[in-house]
Image (cartoon, rainbow, N blue to C red; front, side):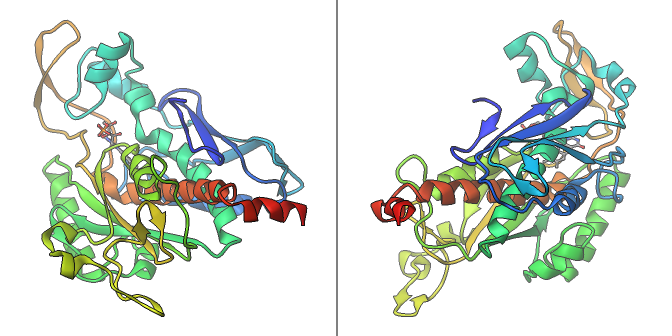
Length: 357
Ligand SMILES: Cc1cc2nc3c(=O)[nH]c(=O)nc-3n(C[C@H](O)[C@H](O)[C@H](O)COP(=O)(O)O)c2cc1C
């Protein structure tokens, strides 16, 4: 339960940053889905480290091996397991922090909770685990594609600089998944400056789910918005999310309410969710990432014996995690939507009776 997500479309990830492999087991995928392995590879490639200077320089090919659940290119309805072998671990980089808690990382809490930790690259707390989520998300997207449901994301803010325009098509080819070409120039300057100063930046990802039917989400404790929030905040370095217009809390009720006409809603401040249920508009959210904790400046900390120490990190790190994080956010959204669709099929007698027709 602690490493699994979803109810019917349910995935479980395993593995550590510098262990032999990471991977995912996905249960609940219906039989008869065309399994698009090329698409799986391309999704992992979008998240892959080492691609450009905006990502960590760890060189992983992230080549997936599909071990089960697929026969002659089709899903069989049995668990799909996908494994990705780790190739470019440089565990030596971490020997100097073996007994030290890195500020901003999970070292302190893992040590105090478990009394043992795999310090190499952050072990299980490393965002290497998010490659396994992207694999699960790719399978969820294979289902959603057949229903014309599309999920798009990109970066809307970096280092406090906000995009003025939102262009999801532009983001697809941007090296930093920028939603705005003008802001992109400023962001690249800011990222390069942060790197030169051995520092890092935070950022915000904007995400849109298109073509959802009305009715996804199960009140009260399995609402579409609270499950999306749980999915997003489970991603490393995510500190919060906003559903709909992220300025809504500054508006009045009159400004914020989405009026309704016989042709549909006249605005979408609610981000496509009302009462925890999709209303048929695009579901829109923003995901807030903190700055990368690993920075190359001396910082104060303590070791496992309680001595005060100065932390001087080595290794390879993302100068901003929101960039690759946007691919992970898409994957998590896809898993939530696939799960919500399957759950929804059990929520009306009419749907159940269809099986007997
Ligand atoms: C895609 C992605 C890549 C990341 N890469 C790094 C990295 O290179 N260096 C680092 O220090 N943190 C990185 N992080 C963030 C850490 O994993 C995370 O901040 C840390 O485990 C502490 O967890 P918390 O921030 O959720 O509290 C990354 C996060 C994501 C989503």
